[in-house]
Length: 290
Picture 1 (tube, rainbow, N blue to C red):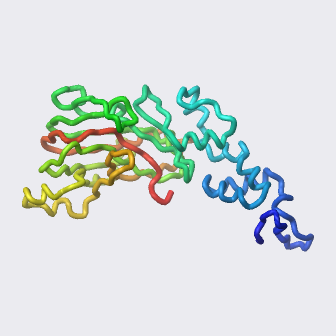
Picture 2: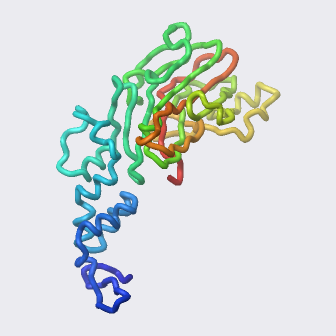
Picture 3: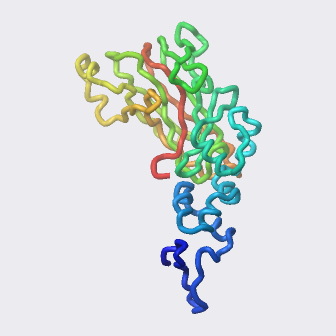
């Protein structure tokens, strides 16, 4: 296949009928071709020829990139004004989240793949003793997308759970779940927690241990068993001034047609856990490479 720019390159048919330019192909055919690419690649391919450019801007193409249930998950959203094209709507859903469930959860699209991403805000999680002011405080944080976040004071045992129905996720996608949080100050105690991700009620995944501390120097200097943190997952700094750490992965196979099972995400720690942690929520997005 030669370069299909307006210079006249084309596809040569084996039957010897001759050459045909990309511009001779019907737009529906080009839409089918572009729909097998990623949204980003479809935009790049729009430079190939004028018909590619027209197809890359068509509602028919971007309707395929949008989630099949987008009209039901964003009905009459006050945060999304009407758009003149499906392409504009796709870009809007990639650039900012929309909120639902009384602003306890948010949804947006991954701009590379068009897959659905979610954040379960702290109010949308099940947090043990969260209704006790002696254990948790609900506060505002200027860096959070949600009206409230949960500030840990002291709990006998840390237990945070999130749940999402598989049908809400994009089918055929490997998702990763991340705890999004802040450490208000350095603590001498190393925050080691157990995490698990999987279908609720199905004990199919062994729990993993992770370290919430971004700086473990104080722990190394005050504890003999400092090797406990070696090789464990550690948090990363985000652009929005929060930290995130991966809790585990879940492959969503069935999607809307049969994915009614709840996917559970859990963070636990035995023994008393004191302050210094602020929980924004749990983010669920396609794993790297999806």
